[in-house]
Length: 113
Image (cartoon, helix red, strand yellow):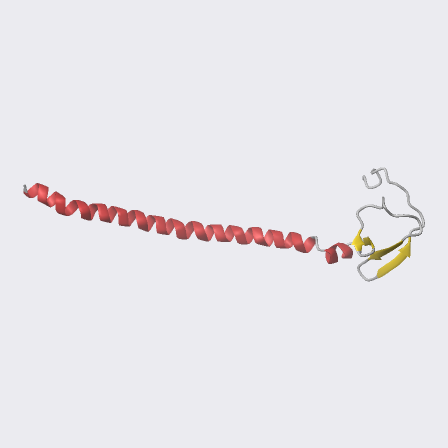
């Protein structure tokens, strides 16, 4: 009977201590993994920040590229342009306005090295 009474008194303490230990481990893991996650996300953010900076129009223009537009719309293709039409060319240091004199379709191999 004394043995059973001792078990009834000590068992809840043992279970509570085990659960407290498990909870402490979960808290430590949560702190550790959340810090690692935040460090990881800062790295990703830094990477994307660099990509945005590299791909910004200002940086692209510094490399010698130009932005061609018609009526304030950037052109990706010359297909809809007609001879004599006015276009704008934005460069690093100047904005130019000119008229289209000639138009020749490319075959896609001009930029191959």
